[in-house]
Length: 392
Image 1 (cartoon, rainbow, N blue to C red):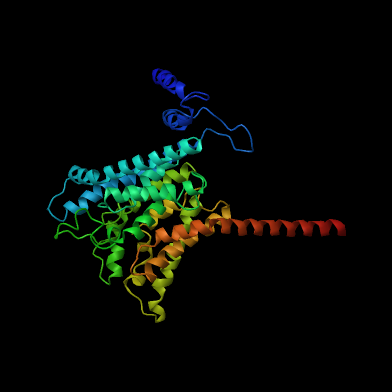
Image 2: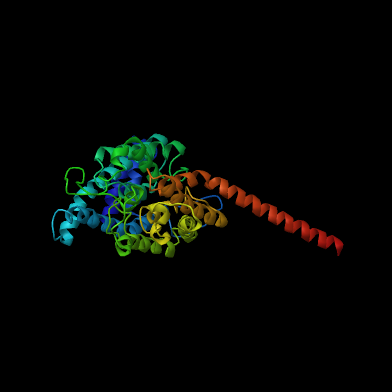
């Protein structure tokens, strides 16, 4: 490593302050911080100082995503191959899925990091590591057969409009990965919904069907998958959203390392369960329901993108609520609205994306009222203490 350090220092010389290539230094420094721990520390202001920097935080999230990504590659191939042949080997399914998904990841990182470097050079600031997670999340929440040029356009929209327009990493009000998915959904709806986009080659091979469980329920049909299929993830869906087991494994890592907020995760599932229970109770009250309202509440928690969204999107520390009480409210409302949108809008049975984006916008409002309530409570206690002291 010392040999690499020496060569890198020599390569960086023309980019030092006062040198001819100084304005391109952020791009070169990004390579340095990628290979080594940043050698700069906070010099002023009140900050908590420890060994956890942004890069380590982002790498932790990437590691938490790996189980869902690996399973998504296998499931992507299995959902296709199992419909055209009787036996499917693990590596055969994994290879087919990887051939579809790896290019999407490459495009996402290539386009996204290119834009990050460009904005860093133009604005004269260092390249932040925030896109390490966003670049992986964007392909993981897309249909497996989405064209690569759509992935590239979605990334451009997410980075330029969703993040850099607000000032870059740490300043965005919306989750960048969900911003990319929202752009793709509204700009190219035929590639992001329907029964032919969730399984590889479903649109070109007549024998292959790719409807999701929520889509099947919204169409008024019965679901043929078992609860274990739903929980394990052997069902059609976005690349990495299907396996609740793998998602919970990632959630455990985020919680143990304190990178993700357990309050948001737990309250998100509670909110979804409460809304699903309310709709499950409607038929017993004489209100006519449908397949989605009659869908058991616990199954709402393990299908679609709800678990993935609550664990990896809602916990984004930049766009989420910051106060302790605010996190409980924020997560609860995300789960509540996600199931509500699923059931009220059969044309869009998956509501977690819109629920999180909506609450991203209202997160500062939630924090504001939580803080104001705390201020009023403390003033009230202070006033009471003053009156007691005066009486004494």
